[in-house]
Image 1 (cartoon, rainbow, N blue to C red):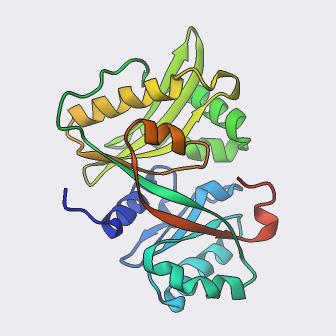
Image 2 (cartoon, rainbow, N blue to C red):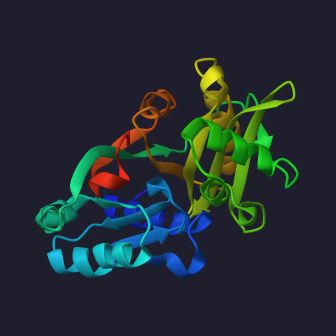
Length: 251
């Protein structure tokens, strides 16, 4: 599809409009910040793809400090060369996670086997599932599955029910022809039964049928196995940095 890591990096940053506060979401040629403003590091993200320490400090570190909430700064590609600036500010690495992509199959698409886009009435169920699975507070859960996900073009919250119980959910944003995946979760007591796979197959099939040409995501450690099994491939790894007191118990 003629798109490189830098384009994918910007596309994922742009797709964070789903959960970032509109006035706290900025995408430039060198970096992006997407802050919900809530007290959860996973929904206050900054990413630098430039080797310049000045870019890292001015476009990522300073906005995080001004936000005053727990956050993660991700270094990708050339941005890894600027890591010393974060070390000098007494930040620490908390791991490295992959940017992954899935190209739209050239043959028949896998059949959707379960799940559907959630309605406004069902949205609180997705927030409760996310809060239960990831230990989110109410504000962070609302940021992960916001009302605007059902209102803005190209955004959706998907869910799969087992009888009357929501067991898996995910949010998607179609950006530049790519389906960006955020906030994928399956209840801890329902994992290992294929619910997440079935839900993603349904969501991807519908978005590909609607014209999307691929999917991308920033995987967690727990989710990487699932995404690989669906055909996602690693493009590059992003190094994660944060303040020690913000990430005790992280990952």
